[in-house]
Image (cartoon, rainbow, N blue to C red; front, top):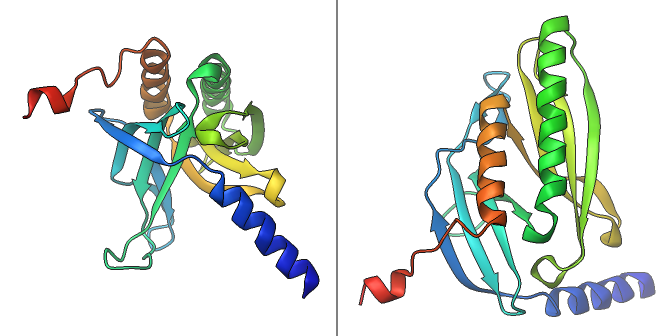
Length: 197
């Protein structure tokens, strides 16, 4: 019981110190992330949303979010998964995507099927919290290979896939382009509040 109370206290402190979203700017994009559909036994595209979140601690992140198949809790009765990208480490994200694209072409030409870690990108300032982004190569079958992107939170003892998003080759290229534009501040420049008064 004592260990549980200590865990709850530490969790409360961590959650209390997290930055909150002050502004969210939707970004128009045709990117599509996938989720495994157990009924059809294949990865299928899900409604995918892109935004830039500005936080109370003056940080920001590019956010990609999908509506899941599984039902959530609450009045909307659906669940969303998301990943957050930190502008400061965009070149590292892009190198992971490039490695996936290289492996995807090779695996397709050889007919290989495998799952393998591509790499890890750490960010210490994202939304006021420490986070690690994991990038995996995952084969659905011999002709469909996915870039799997997910957050890992080792400081909470959860070194596993949390809210994984899957991108095929075409959508990985779109993701790479989004990240390049985000890095050079070419996304979300329109000031909605000044236009719509």
